[in-house]
Length: 321
Image (cartoon, rainbow, N blue to C red):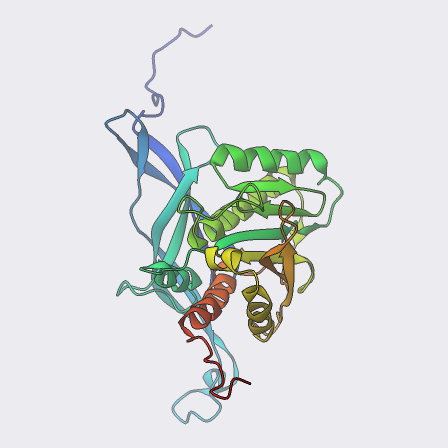
């Protein structure tokens, strides 16, 4: 029997290192993710926080052929080609990763170009600009349909895991049932105040919740695809002004219903009933695509709200009629 010998090996994971999953929305509207090892810093209170730097990513764009270009060869004139561009993943929000040993983090990123401008599909930047110095204080809630799956493994147990994982990550998830989950304030009748989450927070939390659901599906071995466009996902909206003057809800609902947010989405607007006061105090926009971009949806709604707020009140007719 050979004698034992001492060999060198790796040590335990350093205490000042962690894992970050960078999450972003692609040009095609898909939620993408990749992970890297990061350093940790310590706050004066002793908490460990991630040191998040920017990360380069390559985006490929399909360029259509130009049959009229006399300088191109036959392939360039008749076949599309892929062109690569470099972009930057810029961290903007993070939560603990509930599916990995700590310290691990889910890091939501905006996509920016090399000149530090938002990418042309970066809809989060549009909402961020709306919120900078805005006097509006919207109240949001989003009801999101669970994706359809191609196997029978997904059931109540997996969705309970999803709910607990969102709670562990600090996601503002309200509830779920067999078909939907709700991200937003805990109580639909809550008063609006400065402590309510902003438009960005609610949309960020929805994207992070989707990323958590994706991971759970992959771990379970399920194959899934988005539900049919225009099903039953919904966006709930209210403001302090609407709650003080519920009579404005009807007019604003008409303005929102006239919008064509995308080729697939022309919303249906209804008045939401407050259970306590039994009066309408929010607007429900339904018929949203199940794989909607929440930032794009909020940007369209905020644009209408700003226009309605800046519109001067109608003066009464001089004749008194």
